[in-house]
Image 1 (cartoon, rainbow, N blue to C red):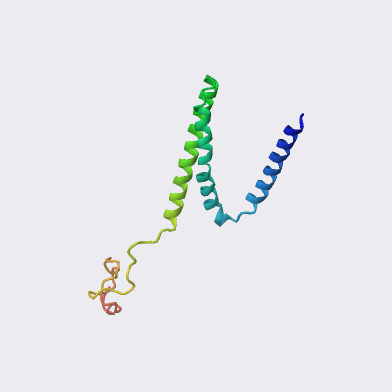
Image 2: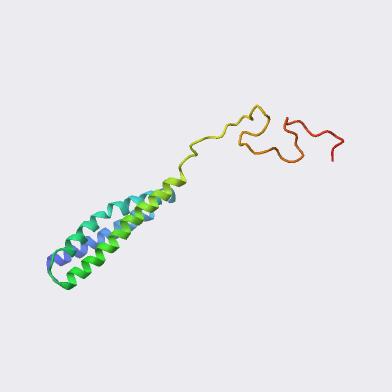
Amino acid sequence: MNPTSFIQLYVFVLAAFVGYQIITRVPPLLHTPLMSATNAISAISLVGSLVAAGSNRGTVSTVLGFAAVTAATINVVGGFVITDRMLKMFKRDPTPASKDAGASGTPASGAPPASGTPASGAPPASGTP
């Protein structure tokens, strides 16, 4: 094992350890946004896989490059789809419902009053069933 390979192995093991320590300490509330951003940043791997596919170094290189382009594209698109779904969960209703009843005595939502309850909001008369 030459010194360059040893340094590369050392950097890889150190990066794996630090990455594991960072990811395990992320609170669950921030996990989805962090992963979505990470998937979007992984578009860099798409550029690298395009270079590998187009390097014209042989059939194996082209096939592996094509597989890398496919996997990287799925990863990037999936990251954006997850981000979009996450953002839809936190989107507020564009037309907030009024808390006051309308002039007709019906609820603001437009739903009819519950059965047995008069529209005026007064309790039913004692003689009604």
